[in-house]
Image (cartoon, rainbow, N blue to C red; front, side, top):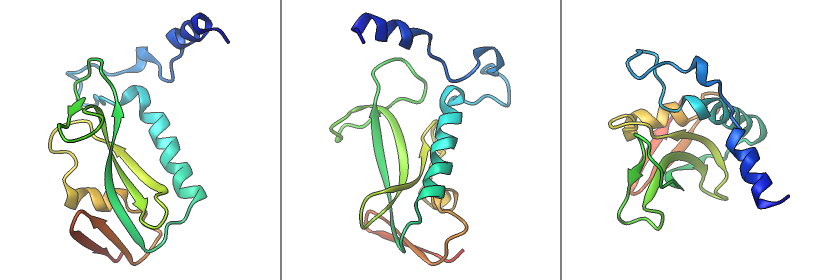
Length: 139
């Protein structure tokens, strides 16, 4: 496929209907509206295809992005400085992602609130590590 053909396909590729997107002043406004369906599908496949072991780690990842977006973040000490911050719950033994959440605004991803949202409820007795902190989760 030629470069020009790829860019012409990419230009018209959409995964969400822009006509259905709520406005910024709407209480149902979702900044991740255009990719929410993909993120939900990925998380359901993560849970369906892989059962994590007891030791999990909560890590942040950066997806590089240099365009304009209200929830793009800047992290000075990261290799990728500008982009989208994604909180991932990974198996600490092999690094496989079992759940993820894209950061889309200030104050949304506090660590204490993030662990119950990312931890799958059907699994028991996990130890979640984040930096030097350990969260024992008995669901």
